[in-house]
Image (tube, rainbow, N blue to C red; front, side, top):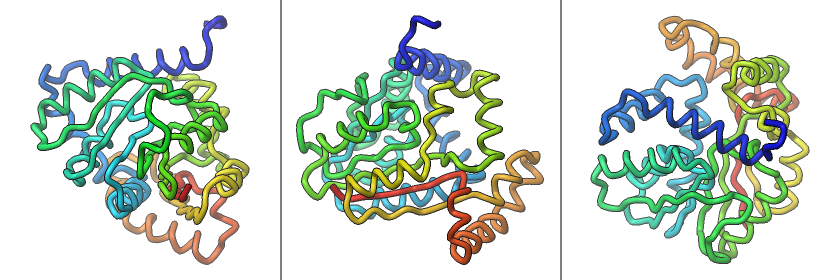
Length: 264
């Protein structure tokens, strides 16, 4: 393990994760995508998820890249919502990409995303190829500045970079991340490279018109409750979170999730 690079560790981590996810589902993958859609309806961080899709679908874009697309579920939902767009997705995890391809075949979409295995720091895409680049929580798995440079390279002039990330300032969330490392749910590299205010400021220096949206403070505290107790409380804690971040801007630093979009 000590001789492995962090990229190898991340690849192995997500290969194993995708292998576990694919166990027990039909070879056609017919149930996987509906289960994904259903799971986000009651997920504690659904507000951030919904905001990401709202921005992705309202930003004019003929060509879209899902940067580090994992198992491809977000990519497939984007394609379903934007059938006229040409959408690409890639990931360093071969198992994740294969799972995405399997599920894509089962959905019989009129347009299918083009999935491939690539390194996020040095992709095979052309310069200025994409109108919109979407990322769903992958920056902590990468070398931040190398990733930002590659994102800017493949974006068209006036293209947009959209991302959702966990934020690194909340003590409770940071404790949970350390426990996730111990239980194998997260790698140490990712735990140590979570997005923070300093990186947000760097993004603002490299992109124009950056807008940042903050989610989950009180909601984080009910995440530990059983499903049947947590679900009825979600609308209230979501409302409370937004009131907190609006009236007490200093509290935004302690949000669990952020969504941001910027123009090249």
